[in-house]
Image (cartoon, rainbow, N blue to C red; front, side, top):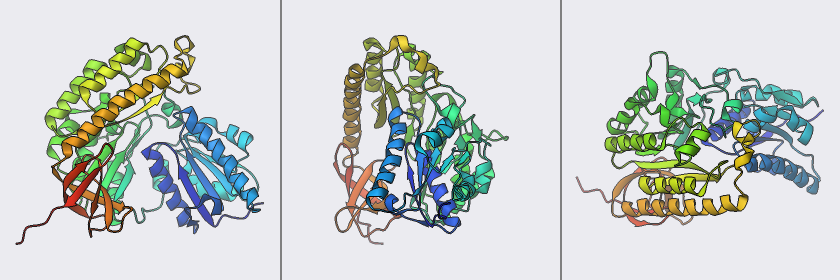
Length: 442
């Protein structure tokens, strides 16, 4: 028997969808009368909301489990109840219980059952739930509570693309779209709870659709009509799901921010085919041309994998040349990490040595950093509206985001959630400095 937890702490790893899931699990626990704490070492229940995309992320979970127990022993207090949630839980299931002796294991489609699983664990029996019942969990979650000025909203889950390196189709299941009305209702609740900006989330968010064929662009236009909502974003997109209506929305919907995260992964057609990406270098570049024609000031972001099995120096040179052509405002890049059960993990003949991957990643990130600094520098002297998100380190300093998702700091009396017109007076590689514009007298 274990005491029923009275306090909890949720730690999320990985993508924005995990952040959303972590927030929802927190709301679920709070609705049961439990109190959140920022200190994992002071919590009766610690939920580790995991990511399985890379091996390092998986290893970090087991490291955290060991650290929590070690710190409890050092403080001469009982170890917290530990729940492993998310994609590692889905992929490894009962193996986590056997390996780490945790109390609860719950997959990303079953976390609405977390209160019942915690109650079972309190009896001394480890609880496991990795069922994948489509969108059933959303109807079982509590109403949204107070949120920050910017909020995440999951609208789509799962993936049918089956990229050869990726575990998402196995850990998140097939592509499913939440109902139109349910999304709009949750968006309204988020605005009522304080959100001024909503980022729509999905493994392939632009695959969202409903029976009426609204497409993500139709959903965005519906959210555009919500009073009090000032900004709309979405991530992560797949090139094959960028419909013409969504591209037009970037030109026509004022609340849709000029930022697009569109992963490409590689610039070599040979590697793209081996990855089963279903798009070519040329089709990707032509798609970006259409997006930029619709919204010339759009900031583009991408994902890159370095060292995929079989990648030659010539293949990597193709990736660098694509980066040179696109000039991304931001990007995420990683060394290839084989995930058990994926086709790429069996491609052992084309193994790229670790030192080669490290060296290539450094070159790629240098190119991205160059272009990010150039994009920020081009913002110098411009005026834009900044959504204030949090306090800065200095008295009177606040931090917020530009329409292009750049971090902006300024001295202002504005509060979190305010929209402030600023002039950009300094552009650094990773952030901007702004000065609040003085409004002309009436």
